[in-house]
Image (cartoon, rainbow, N blue to C red; front, side):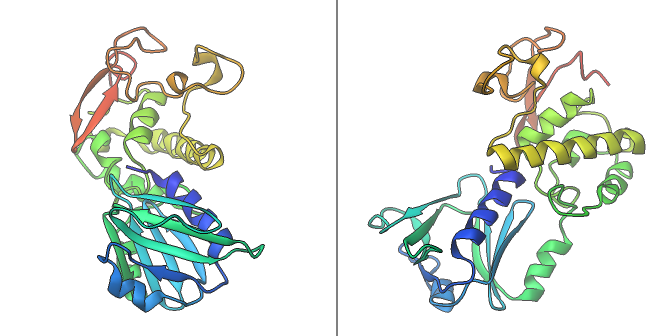
Amino acid sequence: MPEGHTLYRLAREQQQTFAGRPVRVTSPQGRFAAGAALLDGRVLEEVHSYGKHLFADFGGDVLHVHLGLYGTFTGGTGDPPPPKGALRMRWTAEGPDGTGVWTDLRGPTACDVLAEPEVKAILDRLGPDPLRPRADGARAHRRIAASRTAVGALLMDQSVLAGVGNVYRAELLFRHGVSPFRPGRAVDAELWQAMWADLVTLMRAGVRMGRIVTTRPEDRTRRRGAVQRDDAHYVYRRTGLPCRLCGTPVRTEVMVGRNLYWCPVCQAT
C-alpha cells in the first residue's frame, strides 16, 4: 500500500500540473460516471494529501481518493492512450506550457465526490500526519501511551498516526531498538519524541527521493553512490537474512493483517 510520502508527492505533482485550469474528468470504466459528470470541465482549485488520502478541490466539491493496496495513478503529456481495462477515472487538461496533460486512476479503494463536512469527518478521525506543517506528534503519543496494544499495531492505526504503513513501521521500530510487541503504554514520552522526529525526517526524505530509504550510510553494503534496493532497509522484506547490526536472522509474522519484520536481538524490548 502506498504510504504517506507517495500521496504527498502525488498531490504536489497534480497541483503543479492541473490546478488553476479546467479539467476534463471522465470514467471510462463507468464506476465513477456520476462523480465525473459532476466535476467535468470545472476548475481544479487545489490538491492536497493527508496521510494516505488525496483530496482535489473543485470549488466546494472535493474529489477524495484512497489508493488502498492496488490503486495507482499514471500520467503523461500529449494525447492520452486509448482507455483500456478497469480505468476508474481520467483527467485531461491543457498544461501550464499549453501541452496536453493527463492522469489515469486505476484500482483505488475509494474514489468519490464529497462535500466539505464529509472531508472534515475523514480528517477528524485521522491521527497527525508527520508530513503536515506543525503536526502534533504528542497527540499520537497520548493515544499510544494509553493503550495496552502492541506498538507495532498502533503505528499502523491511521486514527493514531496518519500516513505510516508497513515499511515505515518496521524500519522506525528497528532504528530505535523497540520491539514491535512492546505495549504502547511502555513507550515513554522521551522515546516517542525521538521516534517522531526521526519519522518526520524519514518521510520527508521519502518525498524528496520518491522512495523509502532508512539505512544509515555506515550500515550499507555499498557506502558510496546511489542506494541499491537491497541496501535501502534494515529489516523490511529481509526475512531470514542477517541483521545489519548484529547478524541475527530477521524474523517475520503477521500483525494487523500485514507482514511484520524485526530483529529479535536488536529489538528485544
